[in-house]
Image 1 (cartoon, each protein chain N blue to C red):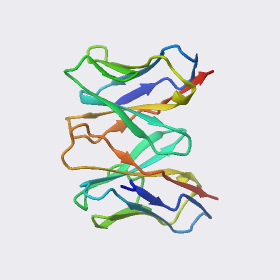
Image 2: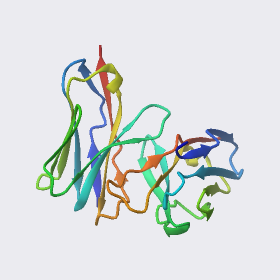
Image 3: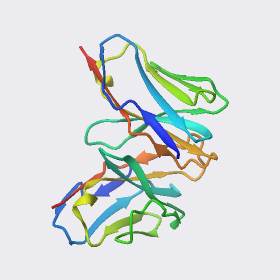
Length: 115
Length: 112
């Protein structure tokens, strides 16, 4: 299995531009999570999906952030318009519906720099 | 408010010694606690889960304890090696939903 695949690995953009981050979860996993990691705040949960349905988006910082999961094998996190304070590493993670250990499988992350 | 606290200062130890990392929490009643390892530029990787009714869990050179009275978990790596150098994150949830909240992690540096 290829694991959770995220793209792009690195993104540098200018303030005000739209940013789209992509994630392909592990096949068969029912849950998909988007986390953001910064030095100041650590790893924060933004939103998670169960069977493609958003369950909890209370961690999404503001309306500039949106996430979709049109099918079981693809999710996007969009920031529009982007701001310098959005600079962070964004991680996607997935796990099976039947969790014995609750282990999350993380992708390698997308490092976003907003100038 | 709910807090998960891990030592922000890096832990430096000599190869062969036991590393002990601490995770303290407040205003949580976690059903379980997880530990993850994160290498620079990589995503976190799951290591161990310990449930609220378990005092201790072992896996190879790793040992985790969970004290719900003290609201603390200790993570031990015995016979540490330079390859163990990484950031270690604890994560816990409330209600057994397996939707974890993470601490900020502690960096471990093992010197040869």
